[in-house]
Amino acid sequence: MSDLKATSTRMPVIRYRNGVFSTGEDLVIREVPVTLLLNNHEFATMVCSPCDLKEMAVGFLYSEGILQNPVDLKSITVDEGSRTIKVETTADSLPDERFVKRLVTTSCTQGGPSLYFFNSARKVVPVSNNIKITPREILFLCDEVDKNSPLFRATGGSHSAALCTRSKVVVFFEDVGRHNAVDRICGRCFLENITMSDKVLIFSGRVSSEILIKVAKMGIPLIAARSAPTELAVSLAKEFGITIVAFIRENRFNIYSNESRVVKDN
Amino acid sequence: MSDLKATSTRMPVIRYRNGVFSTGEDLVIREVPVTLLLNNHEFATMVCSPCDLKEMAVGFLYSEGILQNPVDLKSITVDEGSRTIKVETTADSLPDERFVKRLVTTSCTQGGPSLYFFNSARKVVPVSNNIKITPREILFLCDEVDKNSPLFRATGGSHSAALCTRSKVVVFFEDVGRHNAVDRICGRCFLENITMSDKVLIFSGRVSSEILIKVAKMGIPLIAARSAPTELAVSLAKEFGITIVAFIRENRFNIYSNESRVVKDN
Image 1 (cartoon, rainbow over the protein chains, first blue to last red):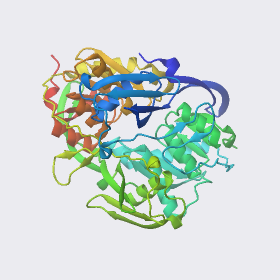
Image 2: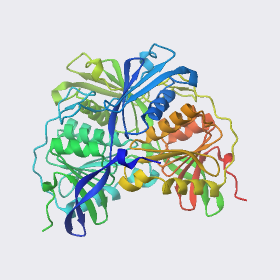
Image 3: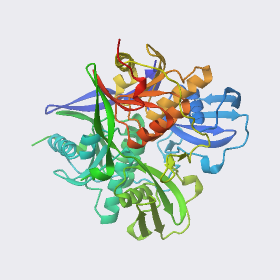
């Protein structure tokens, strides 16, 4: 049974339902970076739900071929405070560097809002663009993206990302990986010199911290997604001045951060 | 507009609908490993849809902080045959090793069924267990998992994985990351010495190559998922003797490989 208290948290939301805004609270899934030390060497940072970290680490190391039999595991210690898992194996050395997989994505310095990105030297600059968009426009753009996602319609296996003005889709990509779909948008805009900072991103997937960081680096002020956001993504969005709209359905959605960009329909 | 011819492929399936099996064909999403060479150094292998690779590479490098302005990009060459993207930037050196992110997951040697896993020295042994399961049992287990996924019900942001016998759930985990949910199953079984090779895995997410490889390493003969499989996952499943059941809905599903494990209800 999942430990809801550890793995989710209550956050304020603005709800939009059939033309009416209201304030409320929503249970949002937590997502935390956990560092795995293998024989005293930093091996990987896993972004995961904060529970059952022993199982998480052992399963990951098994999948990586580091652990194969119970005798391979000398000790495992979880430090909940620093979110560190120390694993000692009977083979003291690290595996061949070529075989090392680093899941490193993001990490927070403890106790503060400032962030340190292991995976990039690039600093994220808070988004300042004050674009406004109405619920009708958001719902229209989502419909457009759905109607024009042939790979998803054919296979059910892709994610869509679309960079849009308030009234139309400007760049659109589908990919088997949701991160890739966002990267492709960025690549096209880079190659064709398309401004991203005055547009919104319509996205079919969940808004995880990794997706939010991509959006922040692209300077996009608003992401509107069909699926759920994570707590870490919402915290980052608040820090970076980004609006997260999520759980978009036929005539409703929730706003998790910087709601002033979403204004009433005329 | 997505190039459906490049990004999906027709595969034979066995359909189960309301008690009746039939043969058919299904469009399955493709997923290919693409190697990114940055200034003649292998930088990352991205598993993605095989189209618009230039955008893919540029967006990824932008997100990683390697490319920031159009002047940073000296040249980009895509070799569709070897699925290699060569990028030259004005900074010839690689970024600090600590900042390098390797998305390396899986790769196929060209033209043959044999596989080489960059991310693990561990060899996958084909699964031989001849477990049988009926449609009613599969649908029952899926219902059980759905009913008992409190984190998903509360937040809509998690994935579930459950290791089951034909009649009941033995190990269950939810996680914000779908790979983590599977790793946790593996970790619990490793720590508590629970046999995996005579059980099935019920999974809420898509069956990608990375998930399939995890299942193969765990020795689990059958994965049954709510969502779509990828072509690469189906090919690997055929090679490793694993059964993929996917697109499970109230009273129907498709079987993509090794269908003999799914037998008629009594």
